[in-house]
Length: 208
Ligand SMILES: [Zn+2]
Image (cartoon, rainbow, N blue to C red; front, side, top):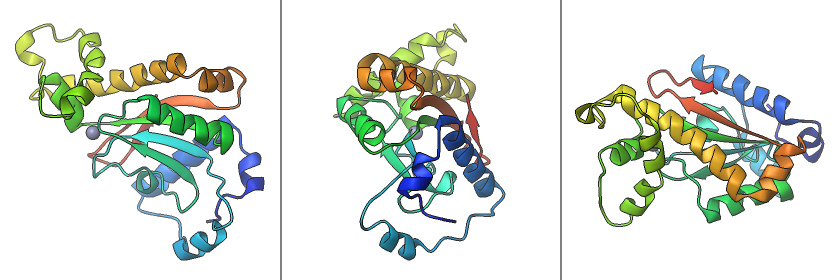
C-alpha cells in the first residue's frame, strides 16, 4: 500500500476519497489489512504530508480512524473529541486540513453505544465534561421518539444510537454554518462533508 504523495492526493476528488475510505473499512472488516511498512512510511513522509481525508471521531478507544479505515502514516488527519462535536479549535484544524493541506473529504464519524452520547442522554454532570455534553444536548432534544421520558436515557440503546446519528448530522450543520471557509470549499466541489456511523459490534462504517 503506497503512502499518499502530492501527485496521488491531487489526483483524488471527494468521491474517490470516500471510496478509498470505504475500501479501507472493507479490508478492516474482512481482516485483510493492507501490508504496510509503517517505518518506511515515516521516512517517505519526513519531507511532507499529503493526507486525503479528515476524520472527526470520538475519543472512544474502539474507534481509531486509522485502524477502522485501514490507513497508514500520512494518509488522514484525525481529530478526536468525546462525542465528535466541533468547537472553534477543531474547525480551525479542519480548515487547515482542507484549505492548506489539501484533503478532499471531511467525515464526521459517530459510533454506536457512545459513552458521551449516553452521558448527554442522562444529563450527566462532572467538571469540564458538563460543558462538552452540553454540545450534544441539541441532538438529544431533536430525537422526538420515544416521547415517554422514562425511555429517554442511556438504558435505551436504540434511543442512544438515534441521538448519536442525529448528533453527526447536527455536527455537519455546525461545520457548514460556523466555517464559511469549509462551506465555500464544499459549494465549489473541492471537498465533501459527510457523516458516518461506526458499529462497535462488527467494525463496519455506515456512510449516511
Ligand atoms: Zn463515543
